[in-house]
Length: 319
Image (cartoon, rainbow, N blue to C red; front, top):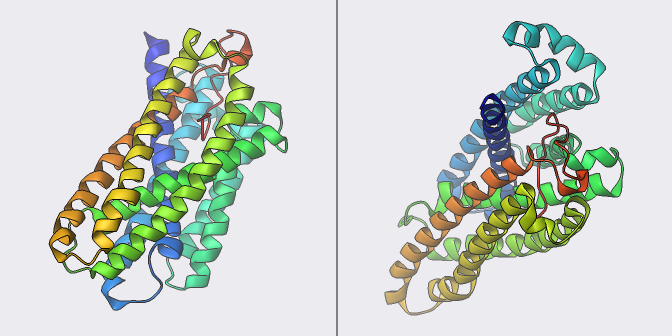
């Protein structure tokens, strides 16, 4: 039971990290790519995006600190006193400690960049965020092969694409689609939906390709999909992702044409349907992150059935 509780606690911490990571990445991507650059009507949405980005950044800092404490506790195997005593050693003498310190510096820089309204600062923040995502890839299963190996780089690309897609979906729902946005002009709503659809399409391509590569490395054999706990959780994640993609396709090919059409009687129903579909996508994405967090705590089948290193937690699991 203590082992199961530790697994659940570590997965919850990882879940919070993933959600916060997607929130920051999604906020920046939404502001820079999804929302049109001009238009006073979108000022409210931009302010919402900015507040959500800051809130997600604060959550990411707190979750990252919790991850550090959990990692120290795993390494020491003792109580809170032993864990706190070991923190300096974990930070100064381990690979994870080096990665965590680099992440902490990057998060501090992000806080400075996100506190301004300059577009160039937001672009610099997005570049910095790519580095933050890389630190999560370097503390995951793929890093077992080395920091600069193809496996780690593929895992990084997977995490970036997943965070950008899921994060911009979360941010767009909260800041734009959550309500019918009667005050938002239809042309802006159509433009936002089209921009997000194009972004999601590119992200999904990267997710699928990198996910196949990750699956080949981590699973080792096809039967491991149903004979291992890792594989069964991965199947659940795949089904959830497919559900989210189906809803995204319905938005792109069913709702968007009605929203952009000339028949005004379809516009209100299309707005309401768009809001419902996006809300369902968000719930599925949150569940996907839960599966990803759990995968980070399970030994991949390539370990040959060993318990693996429970100190390794991954930023993204194979899709």
